[in-house]
Every structure is written in structure tokens, then in C-alpha cells.
Image (cartoon, rainbow, N blue to C red; front, side, top):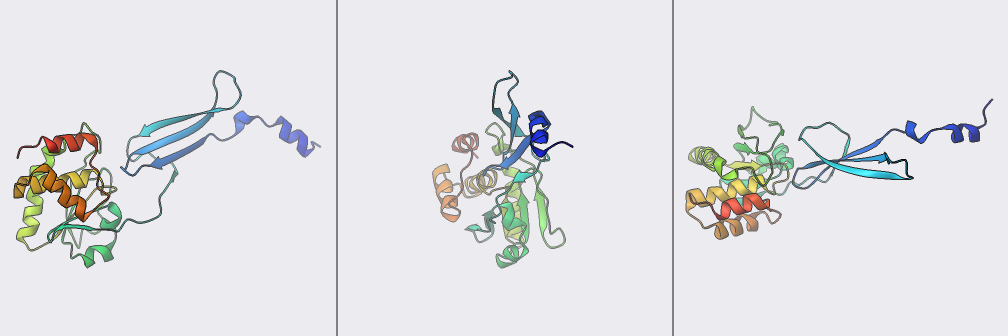
Length: 206
């Protein structure tokens, strides 16, 4: 009968399950971190980090704290994360009637109670965010005409949705980029359009 010590000695490290952690960054980007043994036979492990396509399956470390902060940019124009968009109490408190979902792969939970519009936009600097502004603004206008309120959200409510709201103020109210940005920042201080979106909006001429 083998002793426990012999079993432990005979156990190969290669039989250990490869460790893999999937982390979602604040911008909604999914990164897969793998630890594996070195291929050159050396001691220790190497860590690989790769970016996942959204929706890639892996048990990931999730931030459990909900972000239910809603930025009221105009009485009819609200900005938030997917957490707020998925919380019926928050939606009812702010009298939301329409939801503009500009995230990639985020479900609309209350189709019987809200009017939804979904544009699957990737939070990447080379995504042409300004090409979506007219369509998004038309949806906001329709809600406003019906005395409704639109909640614009992406994953974190930081880059894509804030860019759309800034663009709306520039397109419909004729605000400069600086004025539109500062008004949206005041309503939701955590906004940070990615560098590509920032540049596109700075150069945007409605």
C-alpha cells in the first residue's frame, strides 16, 4: 500500500488543472489570464493574458458591487451602467420609459415594460461611434415626444453610452464638445470615453 508521501511524490505537476481566470475590466473588456508551466522546461510558471471576444465562457472574477448611480443629463435623458438598466426599482424611480442599449451582448430584461433599442457597439478606439449618433438621437427624440425618459447604458456606463449622450447634446443642442462633455461628466462623474471616441467627438461636426 502506497504511503501518502509516496503518492504526493509521484504526483506530476502536469496533471494539475490549468488555472484560468477571466477578468472583466471597468470598460467591459474581458481578459483571460492563464498560468501554465514553462515550455522550455525551466522551473516555475508563466502567465499569459489574452483579450476575449465578449461572451467567451469562463468562470470569471466578478465585481459584485452594483453600480446603480444614474446620471440625469436632461429630465428625459439618463446615463447609467447595465446594473441600473437591469434593476426595475431604479428604472421605476427615474420613470424610465425607453432604454437605449449600446452594449455588446447585454440582454434587455423588461421588454413588456420598456421600449428598447439595441445597438451592439464594441468599446474599441477604432469603432466609429459617431456613425451611430443620428440613429441613437432619433430614438431619444421619439421618447421625448412621448413625454418619456430614456436610459442610455452600455456595460459600465463609462465609455460607449457616455459618448452617445455627449454626441446627442452636440447634435441636437448644438453644444461644443467641451460643453457637452462637462455637462455629462457633471451628471455622471465616472464617465471616460475611450481615446478613440474622445478624439472622434472632438472632431465631430454635426
